[in-house]
Amino acid sequence: MQDSIPDDPWHVDPAGFTACGSTRERLRFLVAYAVLAPSGHNTQPWIFRFLSEDKIELRADRSRGLRVVDPDDRALVISCGAALANLRLAATALGVTLHVEVLPEAVDPDLLARIHYAGEFHPAAPDGDAVLRALMARRTTRRRFSTESLPSMAMDAATQAVEQDGDATLEWAIDQDRKHALALLIAEGDRAQMADPAFRRELADWVHSRRAASRDGISGAAFGMPDLLSFAGALVIRSFDMGDGQAARDLALAEGAPALAVITTYNDTPRDWMAAGEAMERALIQLARDGFTYSYLNQPIEVPNLRPRLAAALSTTQSPQILIRIGRALADVPPAVRRPVSEVLRG
Image 1: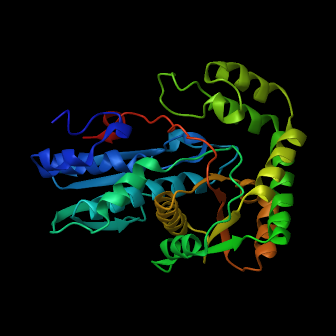
Image 2: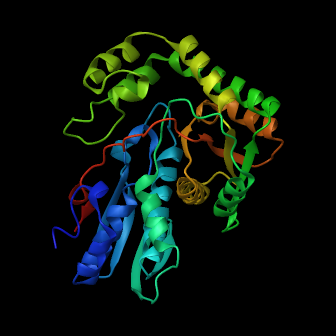
């Protein structure tokens, strides 16, 4: 059993699912895929808890919240929505039926979803193997992309993935004028954030070597330095306002990306944030299937006075939730570290 569900989720082998001898073990297997989801600063702000042999709940771990950049826990809930999407995608790929209630109890805002393992159907999804491979292949990279354009078929598939439930929409910026307008807002957000010592301290607190025992956070390699110098990178971030330099780098990355994309929702409540997280992750997995990757450029959403300006630039009345750039990586991107399954699954 230990071989079929390793504690490091990056080592999960879908062939091990058939070795699971109980519903409880199958749920644990699905959670291993769920926690491969992306999260802001790689905080991994989720807890899964067994309620019974065939039921688990997904809870927000607000101790991992980002009080400066995400004071309302909007991004935290979006990250948990992405984890829920991974769990659903893996279940469908493996031929499992789940009954999911999102935000089932208004009196318990930390309870984000209740999940019931309702049985198995055969055969599993015809593209299940491709989905499971994409769950393992999804990567975030802050490095520049190939100049290859994003094919219209890939864009259409990502749009369909976002909008399939009707709770979120996907706005594209692929022409230079629209990308430039968004890039200017991203750069303005960089300067505003890096000028704030509290923001820099919070970011620095989450810059760790990949060898750190916590198995979370951002490696210094993401900022162009050797992983072993992550501590030095955190010290520099904490000590100096590098807003102008960061703004110039992100401006170039945004304008040079084949595509920018913004996920929006009709309202701006925790239910919308969960929907945005699920929609985002479905799109990212579809993009990974097509060989593309991404990185966040959420500054115009994180800086409050820029968010309405971003909506205006997109000519939308909806609430922007996530801004990403999309393209093909120029080199292999190592996976971000993950906490052990045993640490995030309780009961």
